[in-house]
Length: 587
Image 1 (tube, rainbow, N blue to C red):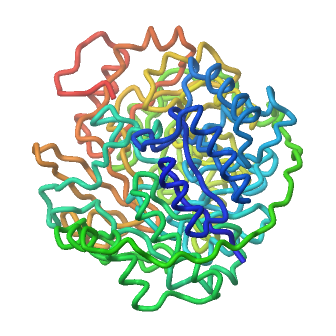
Image 2 (tube, rainbow, N blue to C red; image 1 turned 180 degrees about the horizontal axis):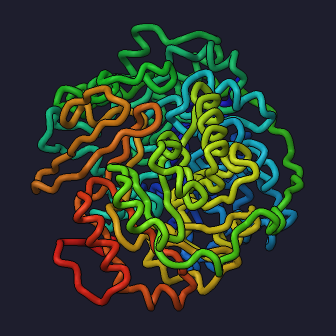
């Protein structure tokens, strides 16, 4: 039977979760956790929480699930030393690849399990081998995964943790930059301002607000799949909420059954956004997944009695943790491009594709031409095949895998020898090709960069959340967006349908307009996923000399909705000292 993992955003919520029947709890300290605005725990409270969990035989997981800046590594490692010595949790939940590397090097015998956070964008069972090699014992897989993908991941032997209740993001976890770019509050740093909950001037007033997830009616299926742990979201929620929701799921697990109408009503009355959704799990992605927190919802919460029946705590034996082996990858240079051969600008087309006239004028001067995988075999690109890098989809679900493999084979047969990827498992799909690490890897520190260097990447793009000046050199070429609208959200749901109406074509374009009148372009991609881009392009071509000193040799010119004339203008700005005559941002 799966374990029940419950949120503890405060000491009071921790007690509530334990009393209601949690097998495991997850909580954060005052830093390095993705719910920095929760009450959280200071050092003394963490020590007390550790003792409380051990006495109750409840597993304790500490969240360190944010991106770490270079200056934060020393305090982060000191914090882990304190946790291991004084708090003695069962697991650490991590997002940052660089922090994983630093932990493995400094604490090779750390008596604490490492769990891969959902912020690591875990979308495929093919991720499992890479996570195992890094010493992870559990993966918190993406909320967007359907039942079939969850079941396949559970077969890998890696412990599989899934969210079953609570708030979900419209964007993929770990892949949302909207709050960071437009509000300077990074979701990857625990500061999300939740722009997805705001109204917009669109067909639907709240086109980004997704209902809370509830899989209480799928408990027996989840038990049969073989997942390790069922996770309830809610570190920002009250102790009453934590206790009530935990009690319901405890009862369902113990009785091995799905929720009845009375239990669903209780869950809804405690907290919902116009009801619940199971759309990702059932793969029924539609407008029905969207909803907001109404006044009626709020009144139900206020009126709901919090005197609920608490199930007797089931005493589950906890197996003692034994340090696991791990394998840090070794540098593989046999199939990489030397940084000296990768200098200048990269032409990247995520929206309107270049015509033959534009290609003939600028392709020769480009270091590389990035084209979405499904379009890179079009006839117009044949003369430039060796310069083309196929941009793989940011996530590839089980039902899409064979199609993507076929597209990669077609690209190879066409003469394409390079691929731009967003996940480590995609390396295996692109065997024999030169690989470029995309912005989805969220590289914000030198340790993460060093980790990716060892996987044989020819180049790595630095995160748009940085200023691009931190790396100070690398074994592989460093890339940064010199011009372009920063991709803010990647969604599995069709935001175009909510915002401006979807034509259900192979490729659709839409606009998301906010309350200020700013317009955010939306472009559909593989499997009709959507990417939402910033309303203004980032412009950093005038910072070329500064970036070069830090080792950035490639500046990407990212084109989405630009006209041919605008594209020509931007390319000309790369090699000149002219100032742009359009509005732009530095983020």
